[in-house]
Image (cartoon, rainbow, N blue to C red; front, side):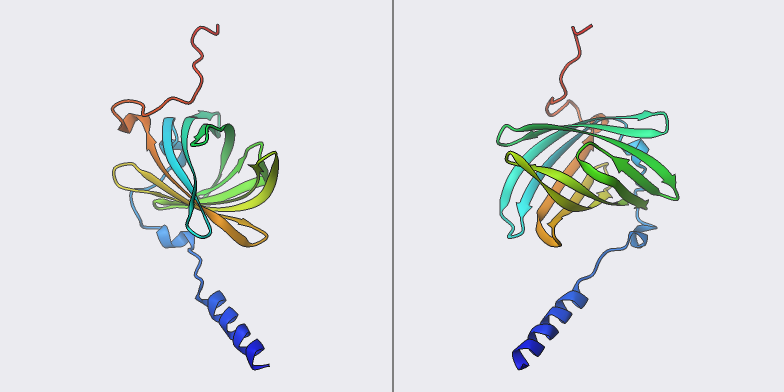
Length: 193
C-alpha cells in the first residue's frame, strides 16, 4: 500500500510539475511574426529528428515555395532526408482572425490549428507519418519563434498515444536573407512548356 501511495505521489508531482506554455505569454515579444509576410517567396529549412532519448535519428533539408492564393497561404514544401528519401507536402493555411489560423495538407488528419502572438506560433495537428511501408498516426505540438535577424526556430514534440516519440527541430531562413540558395530541391519547370 505504501508503494502504491508513493507511486501516486510521484506521478502527481511529475504531472503538476509539467508546465505547458501559453501563447498569450508571447504577446509583447519581438520581432512580430506575421505568417503571410515571413512565408512569402522561397524559404529554406534545416531540420533534425531526435528520439525521446535524445538520439539523433534523422537530418533533413526543406525548400518551400510560399505564396498567397487569394486569402490562402500556400506552403509547397520539398523534403530531402539524409538517407536519400524525398517527400513533398502542400499546406493550405487560412487566417481566422485574431491571430488564429487553420491549415490542411494531404497527410494531416482533419485540420491543423494555430495561433500567433508576438514572435511565436503555436501549431497543433495530427498526421499520418510515413514509417517504412506504412504510417503511424501521431500528434504534433509545434512551436515557432521568430528571432532577430530573421531566423525562425521551430521545435515540435511528436507523440503517439500520449507518449512522446521525439522532437523535431528546424531553422528557417528566407531566400532574401541569403547571398545565394544553399540547395535546390524544387524541380525546375524550365523547358517544360
